[in-house]
Length: 377
Image 1 (tube, rainbow, N blue to C red):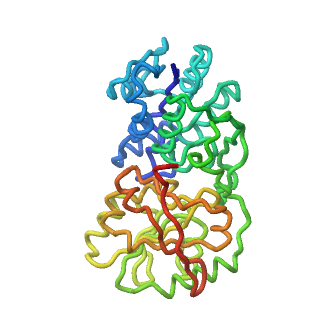
Image 2 (image 1 turned 120 degrees about the vertical axis):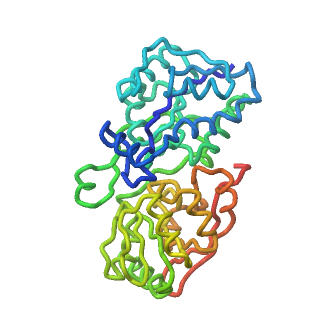
Image 3 (image 1 turned 60 degrees about the vertical axis):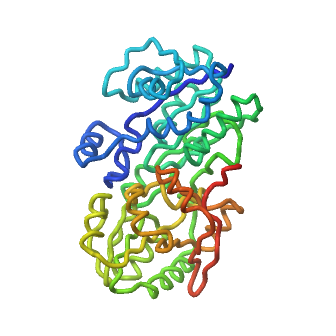
């Protein structure tokens, strides 16, 4: 019998597609919902739990009532045990901490939680390294190394455990944004705590090295190459990151470090665009559209971390052949052979994007690099 505790932060990632950079705080959540954001965390947890359906009575799930997990687990048809905790709607951080503490006291084998770095911090506060845990990525930006690379990757870990196969445990970092650096326009994650995680390297994302030093000359060369490739009749959807910001600076434009900027004919049409604004601009443009993204340092994600404004329907409409990936050779080297990753919240699209993709690495330099997880990982 595998006994799992399941916690869902129902608001995790709510602000991503609507360009709010996160979902912390009641005011931000209300603003995200007003802009048309749809909660995704429960659906992502459902994708992670789906492989356990075949194990029937060999898996027992302990959940919070309502949106924090119980509704989703019951809809999947699992037998579940509800925590004897009153969970109001909306729930808050204290309910997450209390749920984790109660699950530890109940003796679950593994705590599975869906959220982002803020949720990981709450779980770490509650259980430390006294209980194994695994994160299902659902936040806007995820720097911590306690998360699987995707819901499906988390599902493979859970299936492995349900089959009775062992997995070593390792302490992995919970990280969080340096708020002071963030206010100054720099994204730097700092160490906060640790969680004890099933050490299945091919399924776990690496700690994001957002504070790592970069080779500015290499970025300038890379930006110059991409700028020369740009056509005045094409609409460019430029994703977040310091590498893509160097491109906009090369064009003499004010860049949004953490947002998606829309560029055409050397002009900034719209900065920090939402998914809805991108779709509207694409409909009006009626010409070629190119997505320009970079890989997250250390992790390798090109979609699904900090750029949820690139909704699946946008990526499909643009097409795989019109995705430009910018990454210096040093950034790719830091991946140590791991593939670039996609986590678009659409498994079919993730599979369609997988394969090899050209990566622009410098002036007149590019290479083919693997993209996407293997189903056999």
